[in-house]
Image (cartoon, rainbow over the protein chains, first blue to last red):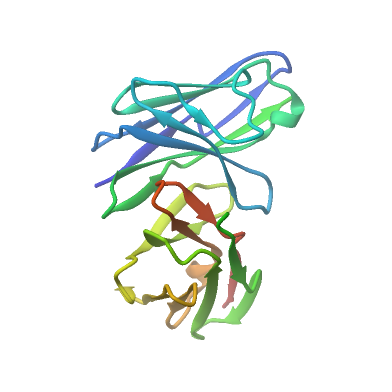
Length: 115
Length: 111
């Protein structure tokens, strides 16, 4: 149990375009999901907390207008990187939890390359 | 602010040797601690979850201990195999449900 599916696994886009990444909890409902960013050989940096039915909470320094998060249902959160630039190239990972006794489950990640 | 440190940053051992990975954190008021494995270019796989009231958790060749008062956790991997080569991350959860991650320990097990 506790499977989180993330798509796409990798995407290449042109500078100035937008890219949407999906995160789904397949066998449980998640009122809260998390989006992380990871640079090469570095640890995960929390970008935002996605709340079902309400606005996302962004960490300090993360641009809300660039990284749009929508959590429209209990099993789906999306991250849209708007007007992407090469510096947005990174590895993005989402996570969700079933409850405090279970810890968090992570998606397989999305490698975004902006050219 | 919670700071999580993992030592060593990298570790290379011959197959069959036991692995000891360390994680320390500055704020002992944690809710739980989770160990993850990450393969290159992949997401995170949860290995063990230790609640704040627990001292250790075991799963197969893996054993993790937690000393909340001293802010330390150790992950032991017995009889290492080449397939254990990966980066191991520890993450602590405070009561605000966010995770704070260490930078990881990259393990190489030589055949």
